[in-house]
Amino acid sequence: MRRSNGQRRGVIYLQSLLVMMIMALLTIALLQWTFVMSSHQAVNAATGEGARVAARASFAGSTQQAVTEEAVREVLAANGMEAADATVLIVDGGNSVSVEVHMPFGSAKVPDWLSAFGLSMSSYEFQTSAIGWK
Image (cartoon, rainbow, N blue to C red; front, side, top):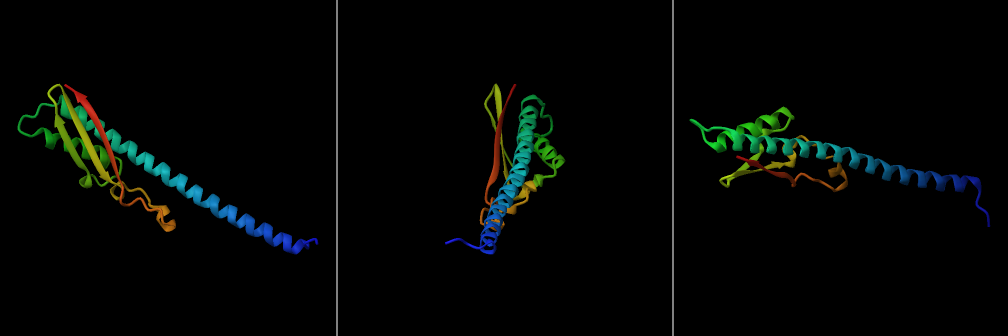
């Protein structure tokens, strides 16, 4: 038994709608991923700058922690992030200095568009580390 063109056209519209919804979700995910990667790169750059400052700077009148945190926060602020929310950990190992930066996802100014679909990333954080040699 053959279907009429009207019934067939209705099925095609429903299939097209389903495909377009999936494509829209994938496009939103791709756009959010680009923001996430851009923010991660900024946190990574701030960590590298912190490691350079911690390894090379002289700390007359201030501590290594304070000077390093200031350098990290300057880079984060220059990239539009809420630098006050970053946690900076420093381990001085003699010949090298390890700097680790933790930045909450929400402080990185990344839109959480996928939360509308139940895929929120608000509880995650960016975590990077770098080593500076003295």
